[in-house]
Image (cartoon, rainbow, N blue to C red; front, side):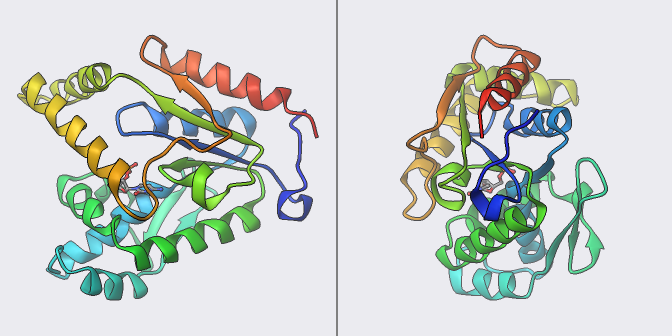
Length: 233
Ligand code: DC
């Protein structure tokens, strides 16, 4: 029996999973949500959707005011009946476009704009209230968005291992990649994520750090599910 908490008026429980790219966060969070029958929120998809819109409008990604203006006119919705939930941007299905290189690159500019972070943080909190039982995944979920969440996890892995996983993923797709180049990209992204002034990547104070370097994905999922089940009301 899953514990319910007093947060959000006793409506439900929010589980936060944060951490750097390449730790398997998204797949783990989705699998945890499936096992617990919770909803799954991919907050990166929201930054990516705004990035996609910016690309479509040929925006100057270096101009935070232009990006903030675009974000204000983006309506991002999730189709909760699907697993993982479908993503709608101004009424259009965009889920299949969000992992492309353009949206990925643009999202990293979008993510440093304070007004956009504020807008998305508010929307994420509203989703937490509305959906109740939620596994949410991102960079700032336990630290900024849901600081009172009863179960917080921070997934980590050495940069070397994250680069190894990324290289394997890209090679499986038929891409030719250089390990050291990928490792460099991961290390510089970590530095940027950790040093930005709003919503930096950080270990939430009361989060459990799960070092996934030597764990399989299903071991990580089992560990998190066991932890959540042990939380008492
Ligand atoms: O997790 P992801 O790769 O889908 O994230 C896409 C981008 O959005 C990435 O640049 C990190 C950023 N992001 C963020 O700053 N805060 C979040 N809660 C989620 C993602």
